[in-house]
Image (cartoon, rainbow, N blue to C red; front, side, top):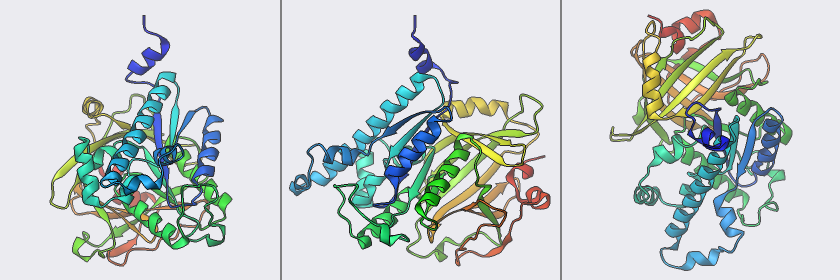
Length: 397
């Protein structure tokens, strides 16, 4: 007879387990953030486990900088860090699943952070040797990435390395590492910046609010995406050379309502990574449940699913709606995360720019728009704009 833990491990419809990465440049507040979020979620019924940073774990237990003097050692160390990181995360995920309750893994950095310290070609070769790729270790592994910008960028008086003895970066070096880390995670579908535009308490509150919406808890942030109608499709040749961007194909399928409940809807999504030569590198699958609260706030609970789940769930699609097909371009500009949605179906040629920003009051959040895109106007939270430009409404036949 199987034990309770074994039954939980074998279950295909168990409670959700979320994987979140906390990353960023030195002295961004990760240690405090991990502790704050851990307590917050535990108090609200989630089982939480923190996954330590693999490099720091190895360095704190005898692996020192002298090791790098051996020829070929940097690649060996980066592979070891990556393997340790993945083993720790997989083990923690197994423990949380066996527990049989809603769970959250809080990762102190993730699998892409090591790429900052290697040439891109070498990192790609390393992944190939490990029989994996960027799609698997970045997009398919984590539910969201939270980048806490270093205090050296916007909160300079508070920059210190006293809380991490293995870090030695100057402020200039910290800003450079922070930027490289941002670029390493470009392309993840849920990549959030937590900057230094407020005091540190405000920074932590914004982090908790953003994370809350993902796991389905009420949040003080009423919006995290400002939308703009573009006049035309982006011309990638006009993107500045220092703007890192990624391209994707997206298929979104809305599902039938099991109950006559108009306060919620659900969909599944396939997101395929496209390389600069047009080759498909792999797909990530996600399930989303969207619910409106009594005060009109939309909360979306997201989770990564397998290809098998995606295919079986697609059989329950809402046939009164079109399958939404899009081309998407993700990029960073001035510490902001943008995604261009280029519709292929059901409204071919429609281009909407999404900017991940924060708003806690009634005022619209400010967005520093990229000058290399032709913006028509900002879309408003009105029924008219939702009906004309929103994917949910456009999908209706």
